[in-house]
Image (cartoon, rainbow, N blue to C red; front, side, top):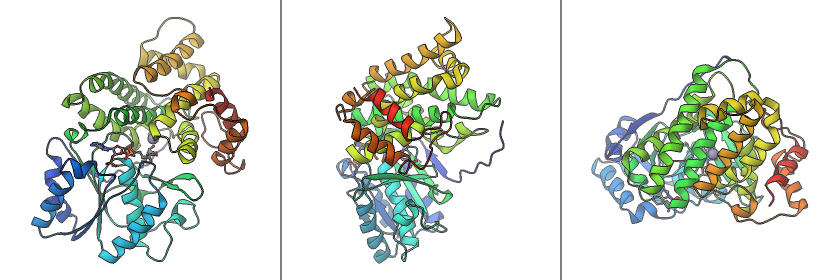
Length: 394
Ligand code: NZQ
Ligand code: ZN
């Protein structure tokens, strides 16, 4: 096991009615002027926004709300929000929504705490973030894990670049997680979220670190089997509170860092997928399953025993040679994605078969103009990225 440092300071309020504690909890965080961030209107329709605003105002707290965050959240929205939050003199940013809303809230917090700096500078790496405002999240969709993660992903629509920023300042102060709030999520978002949750652990299971790491392996395998089991129940009945609870809890655990302790993360498919979302505006989870099978078939020979372990522990595959088991585990995973109606190639993703020049451009952007190698299980340079995209390009 490799050395690690693990700090997840986010307070989690989990269960039915979790959001009823927002005013009390935010007061305890010394929040007075709360800038609320939300998306395209699902929380207006459900009445959740009104309920939380009234609760905060009744507790004597000032609020101002800004909606309109789109999936694959845009930089221009964030820049506007920063101006409004500064004018409002916000001292706390509250996200009510899924990953796109929470990431936009994180970016708004960074920009508001640093009014002299263009917020994109933190994402393109030209300025190091050294302060921010506290962020809270009322989670309405189990997927990205942004409610406790150290990451925030924003798309610069001028360049088509979707970029992540990892910093301890991205960890929210508090997350309110009521599984009932996810009952209304559209089916497509439900399955994309499930795929993203699985992928956050898969992309920490296959890494360059080969030392024994038994507890982290067992946590990861148990998370994967739990989510797979519950996904079938949730798809059948989205009001199955217990199944939706397990998925919500797993979403947080899968991306808080617990399933990478003692090793590292790889995130190859996230890097490849972000390029697809940046260029084609496809849903994040779908961008990942569209390339995972191609990635796995391309790289599995780097560590056949690891893929065989995955097949045995997650899918109960015990027949055949080690290599046969490894390959069967990959095909079973791809078949599972198809069972839950997730894309496994570019056609299913809805972008169609792409020209080789497009594949080269995607690979170029993924590897910073061919200057960088990303991921570590199988290091991905530009040529490798093109090869993996080609395998998915049907
Ligand atoms: O905008 P509204 O109207 O609220 O509708 C949203 C949106 O259309 C809808 N929705 C959410 N909760 C709902 C609901 N509709 C009905 N009832 C509810 N309870 O779902 C749609 C998708 O929302 P979005 O926030 O985009 O989904 P998700 O949570 O999957 O977030 C995806 C974003 O997070 C990023 C992704 O790249 C993508 O941009 N990620 C963030 C990470 C992080 N910060 O740690 C890690 C991930 O790997 C990921 O990259
Ligand atoms: Zn993800």
